[in-house]
Length: 292
Image (tube, rainbow, N blue to C red; front, side, top):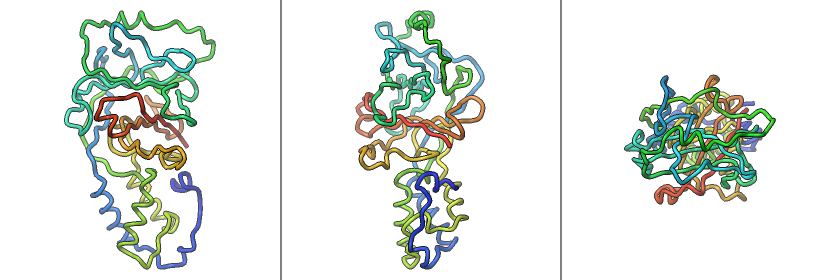
């Protein structure tokens, strides 16, 4: 089954008896969608070297102010640092802070803190933002705050080794085929350019055309901002969950077969609402990950 079969479920529509959409028209649709949805993003690049306490990194020791401790999960167990972004490294990225530290923590269990029933409740993950950095905080001080675990179960974590130093490459991104808004946009474009084609679903396209769309609009890569990739479903598209407003991608980490391991071809996404990001309020964040 192709990508759209995974996401939307295999289905057929009566419109498959109408005029087929030509490859030439589909190319026009692709170019229009790219142009209309293109946004800046920052692509993550893992580098050799040992990151400092306040560097951008994956894993390792987080910066924690003198009067604070590690965030905890619902069972009062310490969460582990997944990623820390020194915002000086992403200056110029629209709407994001240009200074301070943005941190992502997750639980070291088999679900990596995922809670599909309440994906915005920070019970298995935490997102922290520190606008100012106290340079008197030391690594030894942070190490002293690490609790000794009495859990006999082997901890699981989506990073293999580390910490990994991060650098960023400015780029552009456009909507992904697995984004919950993509199918509607495609149908609107098809109706405008070929009304006799009666495209009502992605499955009204040929298998080859579906594969072209999934490849062109993959949404892949580890990045800040831009659009997400899902191996299964976009949780924001589930109507009764009321998650459609989480339209800013704070961070995506994609499995790379070496250092990042969110399962088979998996990716983790953190989303925030525009108003919360503008207010630098990170208490309400949507966390999701899935894999094939």
